[in-house]
Image 1 (cartoon, rainbow, N blue to C red):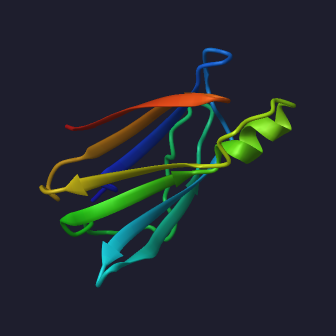
Image 2: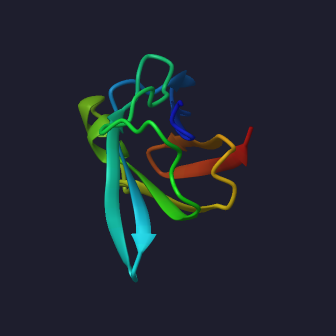
Length: 116
């Protein structure tokens, strides 16, 4: 079974997918955020493999994707006021694939969250 949470990061400053960006997936349990997986965006801006890999879907609940955009922009020589972007969403149907897509520049971002 494939991972049921996908993340993509697009660099709106240059109009390209952002490759090599570190991302983290956290789960909210017992009143605290618990790290569940980490990944890095590929050439298409998408995290194609979260580690550790899972053979079953994640449980329903509140999740957070944390994107290290500060390092990405710093490596391009671009100053930013956003060291990271955190997107919190609720996964109500674990049998569906959830997409969290972030389009960002150094000073702002937009988010799309949906299911397939």
